[in-house]
Image (cartoon, rainbow, N blue to C red):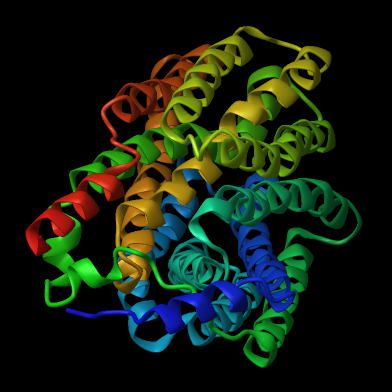
Length: 420
């Protein structure tokens, strides 16, 4: 059992107030933004890539599925690796590897090789997430994590905005190859910057002294709340990333929307997440760190808005609905991410972050195929595709009801009783 002396704890609190922690947050946010741009480039580029490589519409989801297979595998393992070697190395390797793979994909002329390279991109990109969570949690106290994770996770929304703004322009003026080559180079540069400037922090979880000696996998496997959180996030990601993967193609093919206009609609959808994530994290911190109920409300609204979006049929209506849809699609994420450090000890935080995100991303793996199948089986029904997406967040809302968001108090009370 590890025992922290009072002097060490006091030092940790003082160190956590250093301005450098904000640089750590910015660098982790930058890394997450870059990998999110890499992931989101596929959506607005998919039609052009399919036409160029001779891939039919119904099969375009395979590229996203291959990416997420690599991404999920990486998350499942990289979290434990982060606990061993630290977040700085993992983030740097993630960005440089993903960037090199993006540039390789931008040079491909074969659909099958392209799918394989997409899996490699996902494998490298997925290593960044758990490393970022570990680093940020080591510099920010638990009562500040809602705000910190809100800022951090806004990267996924910003990545979609950047991709859906820049990629249609690059395709129109150059080619889809240019977007992958450009963002690949940016990823490599960001990886070098993170390696030079990132350092781990001093904050230690108050649960750390309760878990020494337990197997990491046993600890995580027995954590019912963590497993429920993983399942709820699966439902949320089913809707969020299913929409990102398919929305451009669905609007273009289902309703004849111009590709640039479709990209603008998805960009607005994601832009609200950029603003909403830090805001909801900050509000949750102010209300005694509430996470569960706000997550349920957001997931429920997201499911409803997906169905509403499926009822629409023109660009103006899509532009009006996109901001509300975006708030639901993204604002549950910082609440769930900030819950993870509360449910596990700092010793296994990297592994817990990786495992939960891997489970969440399985939704991203399966949903492109599910939506493609529903769209094809219903004679290209836009509504059927959106109902398929809405099922995920609806189930996530129900599962979140059973999560105990404050198990620390119970465990610490039992530990203190045992000492007495």
